[in-house]
Length: 401
View (spheres, rainbow, N blue to C red):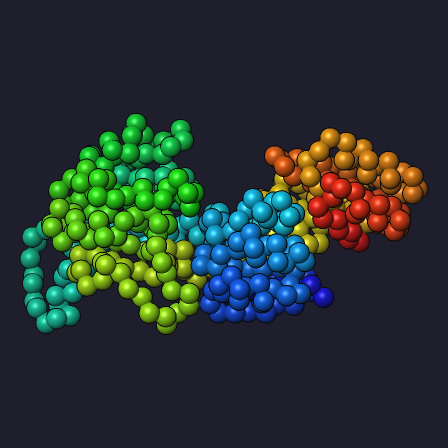
């Protein structure tokens, strides 16, 4: 039986989908470190994680039977994708499923910070009645600067404009502006002009330490800062200094450079205790709706890959789908090094065995190639052994149709 190890508590509906495809699921509530993960993956075919578990080269090299990884989240920077590709491991994520949830949290935090709700709340909890309009504003007419204009940034742009905010943005790529949003030429130009900065960049290494003392110094007096992207993007000590000095009016942080592995573990931050700061435990995408969608999407993609070999939306292998013909009996799936003549050699071997090919598709990407071949005969055992032994073969799978 195919076995799956699911970490970090994705939605339980994922288990139902796995079960319907004959996959046995073992769950671990928190994340695992490298040694723990290697031990837990013994005999496991499918790994499901969220953002805290790191799948390193050592993990992948120690688990040759692992075929598939599902990231039940947006990001995949916690996975060594280059090694996954090299070893023919299919990786799937959920790039769109929690976009709305993250955007709604950002909108709520923009309003809360602008109205100084956190400060009023903190004082009232301490028994201090402070009914005043001082420092509280409507968001209408203010300027929101979005750093990273991808799926989340663009949707935030649309909702923010509906609230009456002026939207400017910066992205390293040329992006089509939605509504009346204005693309700015540099990051610095956004920082100097915006009343609110919201970060929505990806987890690439180039974004490490994107915001430090210099960037905060460029922001307007009293400006607000929101980070719902990646923890390593922001120097929190520098942010604290600008909040304590009064230069910045408030901040909302959902992601941190170091995060606890499981619920209940201790957490510390230089921003803790500041009443003009909203701290949330990496819950930007953690709504029941988003987690249900993610659980369905990722588990369905994994099961489709296991059953049919479809790599649609895989982030580690060339994307392929092949619809079988009415006479197809078996599907041969070959992940191979991207070298000339591999497919010709495969077809030569199959033809020599008498196998009748009735459907075939190939795609290559950088160092890896993926070929799906449907045959209307029984699997030719000798031919498959020859294909498996080819020097460029990475992984060979045969499934019945």
